[in-house]
Structures are given as structure tokens and as C-alpha cells.
Length: 503
Image (tube, rainbow, N blue to C red; front, side):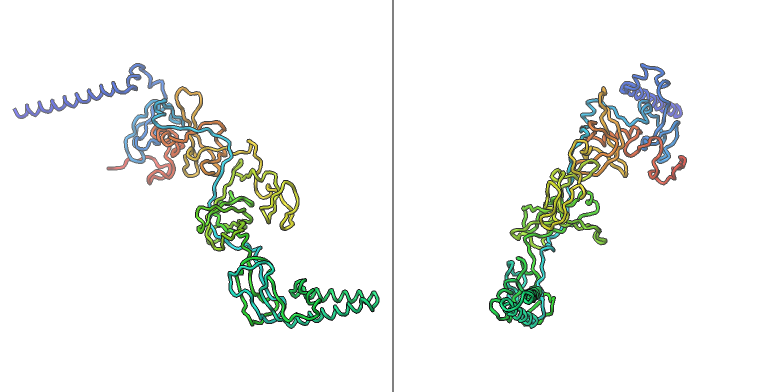
């Protein structure tokens, strides 16, 4: 009896298993449209592409016969007929409803002027062309310093130093003697002696001028008939005394440095530019910046110099900006944050509509003229803006071909976009490898691979690419279908055959 009961229980178990298998088969047949179509079209497999097998975990593994995945050792499964037929295709066809669910958005490839914003930091500094040194032009003793401390503001022509100089005293005596001799010769001597006396007087005046006396001082000496015991040194420019190197009673030699005066009505801003920023920076570009001391206020200047060498330690290039500072609000050593906006032409070249066909001075970029000539400041010959690296043509043919920055999928050295094919019954997206130029703000410049007017996917590219990867078709991560990519074989040598690992 016990054996009979065991037999009955075993038979019941077998019947239950067979019943579950049958129910699953029927349900799968009813749910799957593919099974219905296959039932309606017998022999469909025989007319389609040859059967392929792939790994569900690594869809890039595709074989012509059953076997094991060389990466994970899972059994390969048959590839669906539609996947086999389009295994080498980079196109994805979806329904309108699926496209809406995937939130796919596209944008046209256009030609347009785009702007790249380069951000830099730096500090305010003195304009070296507006810094003057006040020195002794002759040896002597400083008996009076009118500026007692650094930071004092002086105007052009203000007295700075009273200097007693024996050499100057002797030169003044020579001037007075030459003046008397010229006066006597004017009434008593011949024309030859008159000319000789006048030449001696002119030489005495020139000697005093070279020793630092002004024309007014020399005339005063001649009128008074007596030499000055002290000579006053005046400021050659207006500005701020930034250095004081002498004291009263100090003896000085010719060339001894006494003061340094800086004119702060114009200053330099020295910025640090990284190597990657150099393609966007040109001489004469307008720069806007803010200072920590004046929050919310925007200042403006022009790039007047780009250093020809790179700093070996900081890996930056110094960029100098000329800035007008009439109210002295910008002070040396102030920290600033600057922005340069570069407008791009074809190929990523910098262009500036305001400089089209203009002439400018390499030393003074604020000088801009419509024709050739000389600089109003330094007298140098003006040069064309094209010679300074600008591309000034503005016709449609030179505008760059651009796409939104969200369109390309970039991996390593490759860039892939998905292009919506026109005139198709259902939304069709084609993967295409392109060559990108520089990025300019929210856009990428396109060098190769796209034509103006094509529609590229700007939102949903990853979803399209993922769908292609699941179907073991060419995608961003797997451009070549049917072979394991080098470097992604999980410890297997390239070309190694699949092996069965023991578990």
C-alpha cells in the first residue's frame, strides 16, 4: 500500500507540472503578437535573416550558433527576427506614442554667430607707462623735501625738492658771464664776435637745462643777475607718490632716486588665462570685470597685451587690460573677476563685427580708425585688425555650423548624434558619428558629419542609444556590433576564445 501511495503522489506531481507548462505556453501564445504573426505566416523564419544568438547580459556578444557568453558564461539565447534583420543598422524606429513617452526633442542644425564666455581672475596694477622716477640730475645736498610720506597726491608742476648743488651753482655763474659777454658784444664787437657770444650763451643755457632746470628758472637767473643757491625739482606728472627714498639733509649723486610718482587715471588689470582659453583671446578685445571693493559695479577695458610665454609654475598666460580710471576707484592690488566674450566665425575663429575693416594701433587698442594712418598717442603706423588674429567677415558663408550642446553623446574621442530622418512613416532616428569643433557656450561647432537643416535629437539621445544597445546594434558604447570591444573583456585577452568556467 505504501508503494502504491508513493506512485500516486509522483503521478500527481508530474501531471501538475505538465499542466503548468501547458498553461504558460497558451498564455505566452495569446499575449505575444510575434507568436500570432508566426502562426499566421508559416515559414517566416526560413525566409528571414539567418538565426543569431546573443547574450542577454552582454548584448554586444553575437554568435551564429548556440553557446556560452565569453564574458559571463551564460547561455546565449536566440535573437528575435527583427533584431537579426537590422543587427548592423544604427536606426531606431518607434511609434509616435513611444516617441512622446521617451520625450524625444529635436533641433535643427543651423549656421549662427555664437559666443564663448571666457572667465579669468587677476589684480589691478600700475600702468607702467604712467610711472615716473624723480631723480637728482646733479650731485648735491637735499635741503627740503616737500612730500614727507608716500601716498601724497601731487599735480604736474608741483615742487618736490630743494637741492643745493655746487655744480649747478657754477653752471649758473657761467650763464651770467656768457649773458654779460653777449650784451657787450651786441654794441661793441664785430658780427663774428656777436655770433660767438650768442653761441656761448646758448650753450650755457643748454647746460643748465640738461642739469634739470626749467626754462622759466633759467630766464629768472638771467633777469636777476644772480645765481640761485637752491634749485627746485618739480613733478613731471600728476599722480600719487608711491615711493620715497630720500630724507632731508641727505647728499645725493647724479641719478640718485628720490621719489616715484604714478598716474592712476589709467591702470592695468593683469589677468590669468589658462592654455585652453588662449584660442578665444585676441588683442583689442573688450573685457568686463568686477572688483571685490565695488560689488555690483561693472568696469570695462581693452586687452592691450598677451604674454608670449607661459608661466611654468602656474601654467597660465598673463593678459594685460588697459582701463580708464578717472575717479581713482580702482586701486593697485585690488582683486577682480573678468569676462571676455568671443564671437566665433567658421572653424571657431574669433570675429568682431565692430572691428570689420578697421585699423588699430598695436600699442594703444583704443585707437580705432576707418583707414590707414598713424596712432594719435604714439605715432606708430596703424595695422589692420585681421593682422591681429580677427576674422571680420560677417556673411552667412563664414558663420559656423552649430548644434546645441545637449545633442552629442561624447565618449573618449568619439561624438555621436542621433538624426531624425525626414519623410518616414514612423519616427526614425539614425546614429551618426561626427567631428566636433570647440564648444561655445550652449553650442558646439560642427566640423564634419552634419548638414544645415538636419534635425538632431537634443533630448532623449540616451534613451535611443540604450534601446540600440539592448538590441545589440551599433551604439555610442559599441560602434562595432558582433565583437567584444578591446579593453572591456573583463580579464580576457583580445582574440581569446570563449571558455567554459566551472562554477
